[in-house]
Image 1 (cartoon, rainbow over the protein chains, first blue to last red):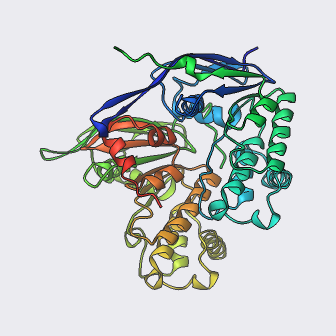
Image 2 (cartoon, rainbow over the protein chains, first blue to last red; image 1 turned 30 degrees about the horizontal axis):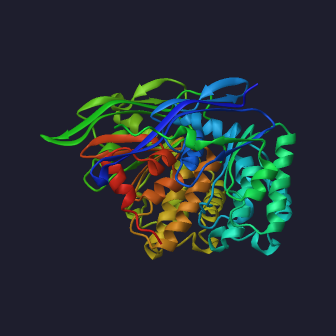
Image 3 (cartoon, each protein chain N blue to C red; image 1 turned 90 degrees about the vertical axis):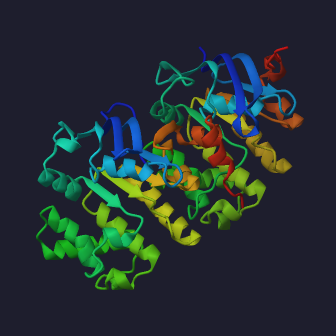
Length: 233
Length: 263
């Protein structure tokens, strides 16, 4: 079974404010993701790893190709799905731990983490209990839980973001450098959490620059430089 | 914030909406659908036609051509421009809300805060004074207005409080669709943040559909699921809010996004 199938995906950016120059990002991206494995996108900075993650989450549009996701037993092409379908996919089937947390004024760290469960209709108290459990596991000091994360340090914000991404049981989980600003202890916690997701049958797709973490979590590495667009002569 | 996008009919179906003021174009050929629980932001600069569009959608303006089909509570689809004046007014009292940028336009400045909220309830047939007052009190609390201000007139309120009172007045009757015209415009940044957070919570909690006109992309990012970008009366780009903001396609949208000041 395939959890996610990326087929012939291509992406360019047209920078209208810079005389319409066209920046090719990736072309003919092809790979599959199976339940219970963690696939790592490899390649140097600027190769298009983050762009691929963002396309798979529907955050970037695509020029061509398909992103086929299993959603309630049905195959759905996220690349051509309308906005409402993309939102439903994100609620139920695909999660994303972004590199940076986008904070909302006045919403506490605890509620930021609990929100994905609340959106899915889980009772608020139950969602908050789960959020507490995750924040404690990630060693976020309890005195911070009731505060909005806007003033947190980079590492603290990242742990809020990780807890938010891991709280649901999405069948596909995207990770954009989740350990970049964490210390060794918390990196180990995240590595253990990824292992648990794999054991639970979740398919993970991630970017990890930290080689130590990468070797611990990766089942396969997809080399993104293979998808470098050919520059027209 | 419960979102259920899967298996319902839309609430609103807009087809080819066009408004001319004489020979001058207001908005041209706008079509979209809006579902229950969905928040749509309409962004663009002043003069782009977004307020014309909002006023046409809410039947405040009669469009030159096009239809706005609304699914009534009984399940029937009606073109809102074919409704009688009485039917339209009834819709505004029961099913719709309109949050104006200038709270004075949406409030009665000469009556108490409690009466501003209670009046909407009486308009839908509530006659029990005790119930009206307790509901008004509950709503003042939800928009963070202290209970001891219930008998004060909104004249004595700050801009942010007036705006919160206007929101309470609109939401107390449980509308299905709320129009908002620059709901945070003209407020201090800290007041804006509080209002946005409040709106975001209420819209999600009540499962409202909302159409929010704003020139502030941060407001669109925070409140909306989908957005439409307008320029010179035309919708030039539309889609999922984070897609439009993170991967803008049109030259004008790229200009708007790149013009946001970073702090």
